[in-house]
Image (tube, helix red, strand yellow):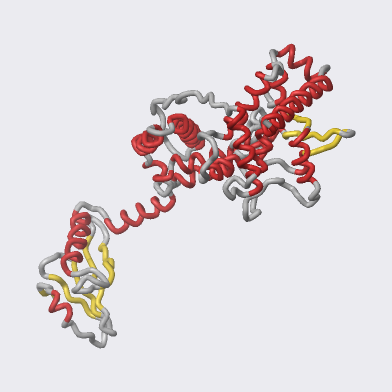
Length: 407
């Protein structure tokens, strides 16, 4: 039977021995089903043009619209279904297929995950990228507002809006994020995860002003004494990492990741070999340890149970470069703002001022020296002599630090 349905009429419908339907005289196909227990649900029954009869539930019927569809919304939904049916479209099936397709879509977070696994794989052509974890973290920050989006709907504008905001303060970081996002989407296109690269065509944000900050003698002294005094309750492992970076001129991530297995003796001498897998240029690099650096490391290797020397507060993993940066950023420093790379630059500049040759400085910090001919000589013939020169340079620097602290 059909009646012009009203909220009052629906409320007063009583259950019977068997379920029954009451059709709506104002909307074709719409009916209320009254179950034996009195429960009411909406139903739409309509014939698809030149096809089958479609009968589907719209869910609970609630005249007040609190725990289900009210009359107005039920009529609106039924009207959409009937309109589509008259055009030969099964709207319910179409919507279901769309939902299923949406659930199968790769999200931006998914793409970051599979890309990160690929660049970290030792089976990758060229081997695992040493910076894979850093790239993954940078991608997470660059795409933070789009992580849950299906990756195919991410637009150039989505990326540009984020990068523009970062560039206002940190143009170098914005450019780094643009580069990693562009590389990921190019990979995604090649692998079939996406059909187009939304980062293509984004202009470069440049490199920003090149940093040239080096610490003065007075700043080095203040910084060292601050570290000795606990660095405003900085985690002790982070404090030691910064001390070793000052003494060795190494990259902060290289120091933060030192393991006991990388330290070795040869006679009375102590060495640290940075493995190729942790080196930026994918080449192992050996440094003699002298003076203060040797004392620090000897204290660390006294604990034979140690794997990674420097670990997070909860001991869940080895420290990384960003851990040290965060530790510094959350503390008031005794000198003008500096980055950990400024400490490496200070080491290089200081040795240069102390008369150490640029070739020896380059070798001390892990850069290759000279041209191909020079590198061949170093590799095959002058290794012992080079070790001595690096050791002497590090001793000169250690002595320089001592003089600064006693001045």
